[in-house]
Length: 240
Image (cartoon, rainbow, N blue to C red; front, side):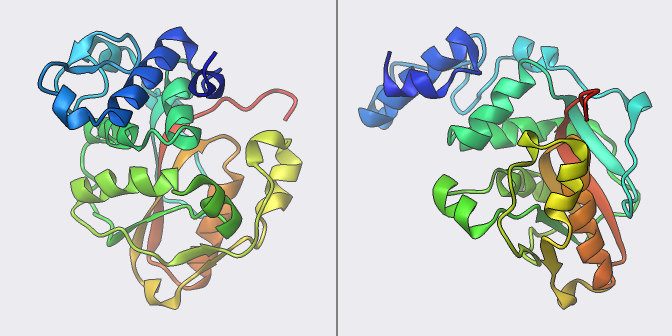
């Protein structure tokens, strides 16, 4: 098995095969090959238009989040959730987050366009920041990649203004109580955000501890309000 295949244990056969094809395509200078080939759907592999990542059928089949289950988070005005964090959404977000598949971010963010525009548009979009250590290891912030297309739709800029003060343990590995203490005091917001309406972006919502800690930091500098936009919500295990 190739080194690429080993990385994609959570994606299923089709996803691994497609990633290997795309890697080979890039290695051979895909510009020349694109005249004789079209992009495959990331999930099922059927040909799709150049620049597309999912076919219409796979896009339509992604499990949307039920509005009747809308979450509330401390200090947050509204929480906008796109998908349920189940297969195949899990595969797409893992590929974006851990597999450098940045081209999936605009596709995933497209789900937010299915919502009506907020009555009060935000002044800026701010992604949940990574620690310096994690940024250096990963090379990018998946929340920032999701924030860019959202900001374009909401007609406002992506802004810096929230920093992670210290490295924290990966939240996915911790029970609920440890998640809360893991991120307490982990963020600092810039004073220039005072009075501004903020759209705060992250990839996955589980217990909400990270988003609540970031929201608390924003309120400490007097923001006008915070709405949260997440790509997907994961179920909280009973053991949490």
